[in-house]
Length: 364
View 1: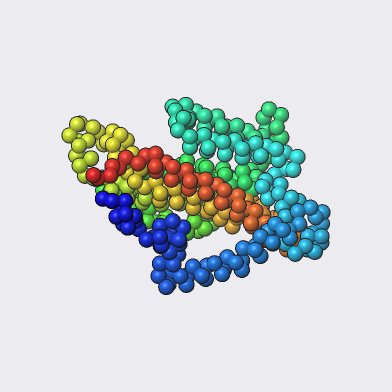
View 2: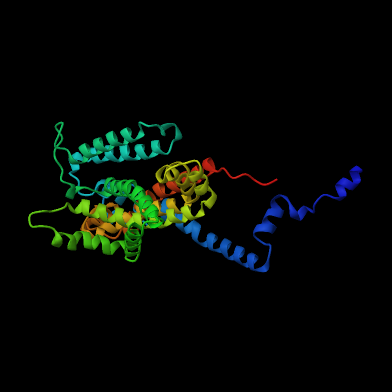
């Protein structure tokens, strides 16, 4: 083929390059063109105003609320003034270095667990020792640390504790419930079905309310369960039901031949599940499982209804100061950024984990 023919066969200029991308993705149809124009108009009207309020006209150095109110932008001086109350709640002010270290340690444990190099047999020991140090830091009473009752815990450390323990205990319980629901034993299957459907049929708020208010009424006289522990149990039971249904979907996605192959080589039920079925099922349901984990992390804010000082309640407490009222937008933007940082990190890790575990092969 001659050079002239090759040049003649090149695609039109409007189908490749920047103009081609714009034409294909933003102006391909009249409807897309209208949506693109409206979107650009919205960005033109909102982005400059938002940047002015957030940064250019904001007050970062005001020493009083009155000075902040005179500014036309956000009052980030409020966050500077109340950040310790928002992050650590009503934990004793002089001891707040302890929940800070506990938060750093919990975050480090989570990050290390996401790195493949740490997937070693000693990782559970690492977690046990780390959580033991977190407990010592938060409670105190040993090594010269002042004892702090967990009724004074709050803010980000408490949110991380509720979410971490919630995921850590809900996941294995959910897997067992999923196996029970697919079991051939009628009694086991019936119990798992009743539990899953009952828990999934009520909101988390009702479980928290029952664990906080109604559960003590059924306990023997003189026997009590800590309010924080009751809330943690409610979160675990609630999340386990949703994890069970998600894992059950993964079990159903595994081809029947995998079960038959395991039986043909003489593997027991638990060997089949542990070595062949569950790894495939869990790989399939990574995205919905991560969605449940993210929802669980955000749903810990619901413990505010039973008087536990999580991150949201701590922000509300900071706003209750009469001398700094009227800056709720700044407070909620601040805690939203914290939630976003953790949730987005979990989401990004799940995508990398999916790519790492991808074993599908493209057909020729």
